[in-house]
Length: 220
Image (cartoon, rainbow, N blue to C red):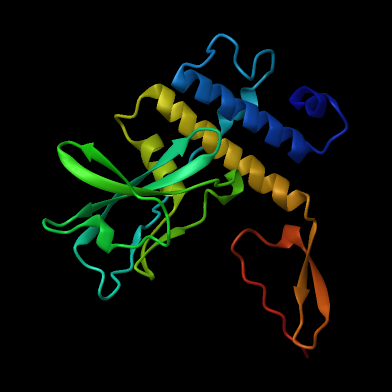
């Protein structure tokens, strides 16, 4: 399927997305040591993917400190990279507290032991590559508790001096996959349709805007 797209009459953004997907798959193969001698990129020139630059931005973790939710703290987050991308958020309880006192909007809560401490985690699953730059909020007892951006994990791991080369390469490939997905989504939606106050619509060229921009319409 990927070969058919790469060899067919498809847009540049479509082909770049497929190449980025294959590059990410190959990096995952190497990291998890799964068929490392038969990589997804076998026979392809991936020089352009080597030029991907992972920025070092400051993505803040937002701790909302809701009233009435105490005895529990956010302990960090990680990405689980399997058939889908999952954001895993970890929490620690104060002494004497029980996890049953906290409702995570019906999300399944699992426990692990790390460095002698018992931690609890919930998963936010099925994150698409173009959504890796979004903030995801965990709610506890009906209130926003913490908001975390998967890109914060990608960039922190990539730029950490002690990160192993295989993991660093995986984070770089994942970031490249994100960039390609953003370009594909926006190219294939060449215009956006915006509602007006009078019930009509106007269209705007998507190339005039980037993700996160606010469009203000002034009627004269």
